[in-house]
Image 1 (cartoon, rainbow, N blue to C red):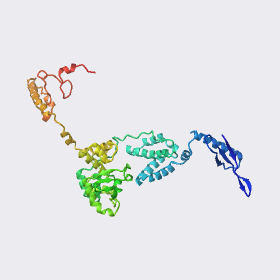
Image 2 (cartoon, rainbow, N blue to C red):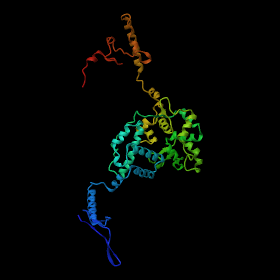
Image 3 (cartoon, helix red, strand yellow):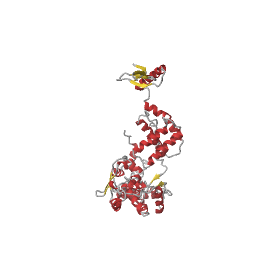
Length: 431
């Protein structure tokens, strides 16, 4: 391929003057024109050697044998430098300050604990070795993995690395391993909590009638509320899922916002004085006489107000799909298992509505069977008590049913509550 070194010339005072430094030029197959650059040397032999090396490197790069320049630069930079750039990128995505802090803390902790200096040091084995030595909960360890994968996926997206080295690491299954379980507030607890403070009580009540998260309540603006239609039109940048969600307002929430509406001129935000932090919320729990952790080890916090909203929907008989839409979930399992307090569901009322299927017939037959067994027991050997008292059914009456008189002395085919005729033992097995 054509390539050569040369010294550029230019006119000075009418004379052509040769430059001091050597330049190189090359034209690879497919190029329309030469690529020229300074070799930054006055020695021709050094210039020829540098040009040959650069031509070979460019050929290998185009063939995919050498990493692009951006990857070479990324490999030379430290992970801490990449983390700073990643945080700056997240700020442009309108993430919260708390989110930045957690990402920086978790990735920095992994850098120190795993000995990661450059991107090449990040391996699945080093992360798994660190994780196996930790006593943190499964959710917390998965959060560390998410923070590291967020940085690595961004490096891959920007072309700085080819693949995420932690993509093959499976997360820890956190089912049944929760260190602290959240519960919903009871109706009596909510009445006491709302009565502690009038201003904060409005916020707590709105949270239990809309399911809004703490950050969404803080960012709620008056222009997002349509009191005439009775709906909330949330901004995408203010929601966790970054969706423009529309929620209907309950009559209680609508009247509460109408009461606050005259104050809208004071602030663009609905709660201009802010939303209570966890210290204030815990103090309100103490004043209301509500234990933060119950006898089952379940806790209540501000997010439990959202759980109370979803649980109350389930208690009122709302369908699963409707509750999922009002909770703004994309996974029905999240609505059914994580945000529904099963201890507050009307389980006893539900089973009481099951059809009886003429159960009184069996109760009458059991009375006849009890009398027959009593007579048989009285005619038996002395000192042998009757065995009909061990099996009790409706209203404490024996549930053994006597099909015919000749079957009355036979034993059951299996140790269950369904007596079988003697012929059932010899029936062939159907395949």
